[in-house]
Length: 316
Ligand code: SIN
Image (cartoon, rainbow, N blue to C red; front, side, top):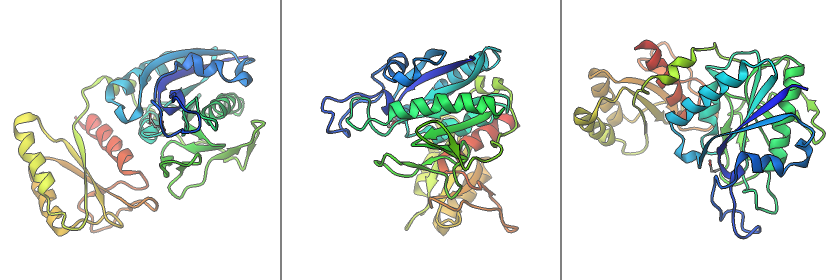
């Protein structure tokens, strides 16, 4: 049997609390990925290699951790004895990491992110089941010759570019922003309603992650959005290094308050690349003939920020 490599980064899946009945009171990133694996008897027959890449609450995700994940993936995915990789992650920024990695991982081997909404010490801890499913999905995907990045959460397989956290507390916290899961995974590890293929982005050179990331910020449009924050950012950038890119979390179909729009024009005039997305959960922002700003499509605001960073890195 080929090996599955499990890369640990922390998150609630590795979290612990004092009271198993009060699952909202805990600290993320306390258990090692080796401990997480040991807690899942169903994995004892699997041939696993575990590597602790980081140990963070994913609210603190950084380019440096993404670079470390990239280094580890390059190392393990090229090994003939490795079927694929599981990454244990926090739920809060999982959609960013999954989307980023999908630009680098080619279609040859599966990379599966998983997470949990309850800490490992909770009565209703969901991490062990999610981890078991993620390893099974790697084996089954390898058997079906499916490769690329997906997330396995609560019995569903999500494409990296669609997955997003859609609830702050429920066990079933993720959705696809209007896109269906690629497959459902039942308790026995069988897939139902499986899509025939997994989407993969063009495989970019991993060396892109070694570069200094551009500064890309997010600004929301809302009632009374008069561009104050953006003008302040532009003034600050004068002394502290350039603002390279800006993602607008617009209203509705990515529209902007006229006050913010005027500030956006000032930003563009000094060389800031601006993309528009929406603060609305589903539907995305499509391009229109009259567009002066690039539309971020189906991506969440946070994923659009990742996309703009990659765009700027490639165009430098
Ligand atoms: C985190 O994202 O690391 C904490 C929250 C979670 O995993 O649910």
